[in-house]
Image 1 (cartoon, one colour):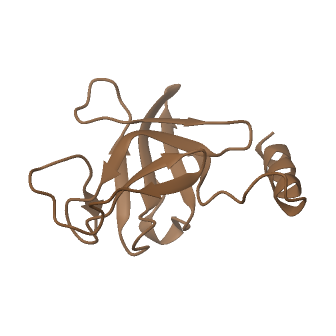
Image 2 (tube, rainbow, N blue to C red):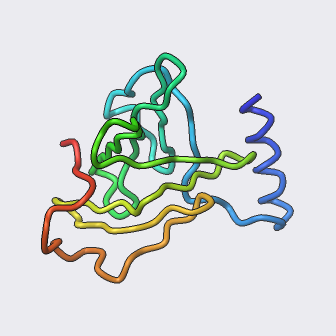
Image 3 (cartoon, rainbow, N blue to C red):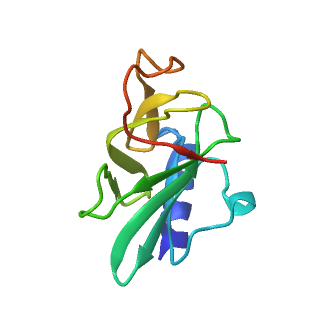
Length: 131
């Protein structure tokens, strides 16, 4: 069914009816190896019927890999939802503590940068990177 969603999304983008998303969601059963994480794709790792992790390349620096906990018993934790066209929304914002110090929201597949993006955070925050 996801191929149908991709075809529908690409058709609407080509017709100019929706903007091309910067990020899309793919559900997987295991963590993808770093060299298989494609830019622009958020891999939601599911196991036992539950979303456990969101793994993706940082939109500011594609050499950085971001891993977000989605499990309710983890702190901090995030939620990732997607619409019919596989455009993700992440809540709360994503904050890289090292590397690029990116700070952004993802809404409907679009990255919205926070004013402090690129600046070292003053206190520990939400996301780290896997190097």
